[in-house]
Length: 170
Image (cartoon, rainbow, N blue to C red; front, side, top):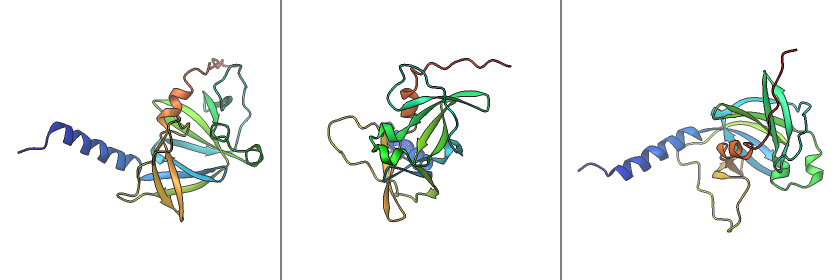
């Protein structure tokens, strides 16, 4: 007897999840380690000047031009309520692509690329009833510390209301 369709979907979904989150780019926000899949990272760069726009969602610091595209920048330190002292230090930007849209993520520092072995991505524990702005999809252990893996697609919906100015050739 063959497996039920529900069981097959669950296995395929789990296989996709394992493959998607196998190679990760690690970074630090405050004193906590986070990561995103390397498959969505387009570039790691130093901060650029941004154009601030009125009425942006919390944490979105503005937009900048990156390789001909206007890209919103989210300061994860603000989103994650990291103290101002930590956010004033040197920072880096991770340019990610979600559904053909680029987003800049401002972090304290990038720690590098690392691999998560089979079964290395553990489920996120329930941390209470409030909505967690980090949108965590799993927890990995890397360099003797817990690293929280972010659902990068959640940042696309976070920036949908950002009004992007048109670039003009000039």
